[in-house]
Length: 356
Image (cartoon, rainbow, N blue to C red; front, side):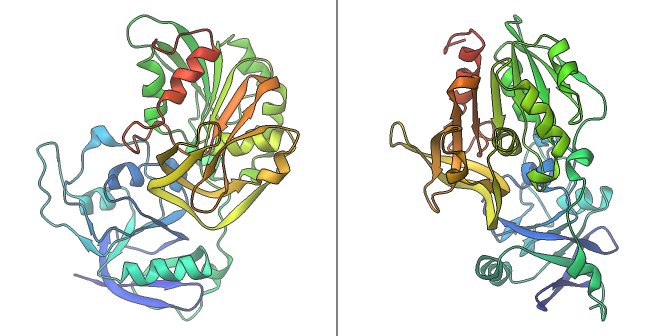
């Protein structure tokens, strides 16, 4: 196999072997702790512009299963300890190396992912480059910034997804980089979902006369999305709203809250979240590098969920606006299906029943 290097902007260099596409991969290096679900990770649009490092050492053992894709692969690179060359699963269609090559995603294997993860945990998320030779000039690594990733991840034209069975509600979904299972969780509950581009004006959303508004996950810095925030200011209070991940952050910004970049984010399928109303802890799936500052929401919303590890904001209720949002992914089956009941709560807000 061809030799490759992972070069970090703190000066560290890790030598390994190339996997995936030829060429360099430049991006923000982040780690995810999922033991499985690498296909959902690679096809999560929230990883746009990032190099993904898997902490679990063996990746690719059940191959590539297109039915499990959550969207387009927008990652800039992939880092694993060991890539399985001979996957075994009755649903597998081909291997992960081919998946990466076909999508132009460069990768590296044979590196000490544990050491790299510890470095990120200690020093914070940093830029990195996957390359064939150690560069003398590392200015591109130093200056790389995520820009315009929500626009890149969003649909460009409206898309209507019909309800499964009897249609009970119509939902407008503002797509900031939505995972497909958000739509599936709604359609299987009898919702017709109209997926809208991220730059859809508030007036166009209201013209559809939806029963509810869904705000999706997405990549990047929430504060970059000024137009999206301005549209939410016009929409909040006009209809029931449910926001996930980036949708949660944009809603907070729309009411005057603030967001902050976390040291290394929350990424993986084993993130503990505590419900403040009941004291119950849920195991959740997450993928985000920013969080809402809880103290900035005083008098604007009610804190509903907190991260059990670091106490960061994981959920907010807006009683006067008929809106609730969560930082984690209730559609991602962490637990499994621990928090999918939040979609039922959304139906209740639209006039449905919990058992609908």
